[in-house]
Image (cartoon, rainbow, N blue to C red; front, side, top):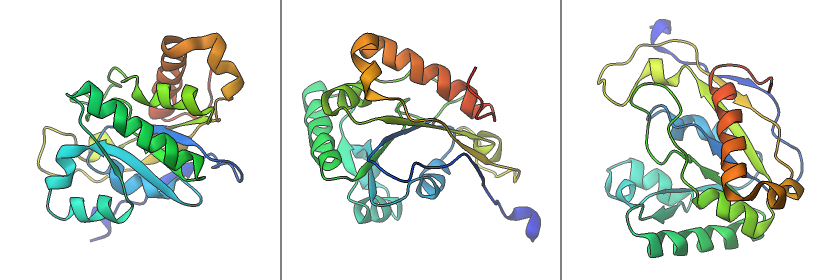
Length: 190
């Protein structure tokens, strides 16, 4: 029985003050259950509108007042980002899985730009978080579970004063680099 249990290990510390855009890699359906272990204080997230049609899961995301985003409708997606910006200004953390969908091969996929626009527009720091082990436990294309260790690596928040110098693409590239390291199991950024 104990071999079926998963006890995620948390490495790093969530900052004790401030509001954050928490960006985490998306490797497994477990991510939505792992994410609440990260933030301190009130949080919500931005999630695909399709998730609001899934039994049980939709109840969970409605409970945290998750913000639906239509990934294939640019105008509606921008409206969702504006809504999330208003939530951030209330001091509520926003969680984003910037790949937009789960990885198929375990590697970090390309990041979408919406969360980076949100960060620049609000001046809210991005807190990168990498999860390792969840893909092995349950990848997108496999129905059975393979229990094993899962590690949540909380990185260092990215100071908004660097946003202007980086721009959207530079900020996205920086977070992508950090998420790759964190999701490989290390919270030491090189």
